[in-house]
Image (cartoon, rainbow, N blue to C red; front, side):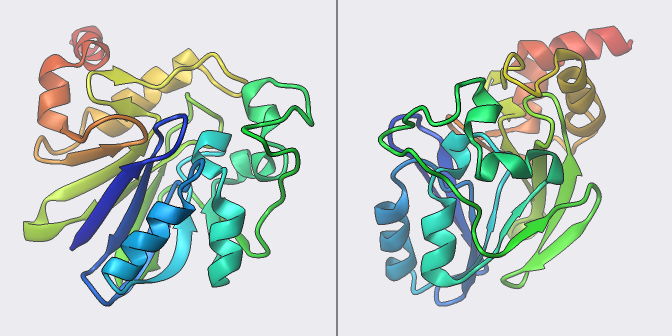
Length: 225
């Protein structure tokens, strides 16, 4: 399996390209600010054929390039319905006045084909099966994507739910500290320790490492005793 990740401009948001291997169809996760050049290079290098864009949530640092990526390749974008409105109105997700310039851009719009993700669904794309889990807290429509990787090792694309050593913020519109803790408790804590976490920001980690060292997960574990 091919998983290529790289940070976006300005906000260091991780964009991922996932495929069964070279020369295959692929899925793009969270195309943020200024990623189109790097994305084109990865697609060309590995002879890939994008078939969809998956979005962990609607914040503009994760969706900034979704329109050009989708329109250039005539592929759909998939997002939870609670965050769909942010595709055309990204200001609502970060509490800014509508029309405020966002990294030089003044207007935003949905791609032509937007499909809504359902909690508990399995989305089959590019020969891969992604499980969708609704994990509100960072935003109302935050989701994580689960995937079985090489050697049957689970992989979690955690968006801004879980980072190496930390978790996502909850102080933006639609965020909730209570929901964040519930999402971590109900979704993250039960996961296999071997799960490789590919977060929305920062380096990859594992559930075992976070269970042992992430203060937010440690605190949850203590509370549940």
